[in-house]
Length: 306
Ligand code: DGL
Image (cartoon, rainbow, N blue to C red; front, side):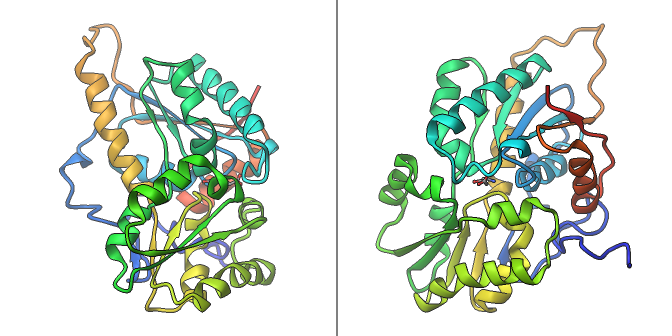
């Protein structure tokens, strides 16, 4: 088998190579942004229900190569999208505590579902911790849509949340917004196999109603979905733009990390962190290591989340 088989086209190749993607996939101003300057000495805790947050981790790695990244994949408890809010809040608080014990200076909730259910509880529990959440990119999608027809693919948990309803009220404007819950899609991506007939069929099932609604812009409202963006792009057709918010999350993280570092007196005894990465999984750590290797081209041995 060719070594490249099974890799997502999004993440194939060297880890810091510019993303090559279908031209109708939106990855805004990646290389022209001055905030790409390296930030050392900061430790960023990132978590998701599983491997979806690796799409955010990759954007963070590109923008902040000298930051130390700590990543928790809660794969033993995934998918979050079909669980109760109380369950997602409880998991998010437990993982945040763990990441703080590991010395995280800043927390990135690399999961739309966990942001919708738990970011408020996280901020209440840790009022002095900078926290970056992720939410579906409805605002840029409405701005991009020429026909004012936008589709949002996300988990059931995200779409039913009060936070998402407020997002639509604030940024939906005059656009027709078509909501497409995608139960089972994150779980299928979690297996790591990104181009199976079953996965294609699942993507087709969720894209068909959006095609019928004649949307011209589709929001990838779950961090797992960028890994199947090529399948979604194929199912939607070349005239449809896909919007992903992982870049925006990385930019906001750079801003908060810069502010955090500005308030800190550098100690002559501590050397700057050297851009390391540590990984934990509540599922199978070896599977996480191999997914990080295949999708991001990075080598790191994951540990079992205690
Ligand atoms: N990756 C997550 C998100 O962004 C959730 C997937 C899931 O666990 O259901 O919503």
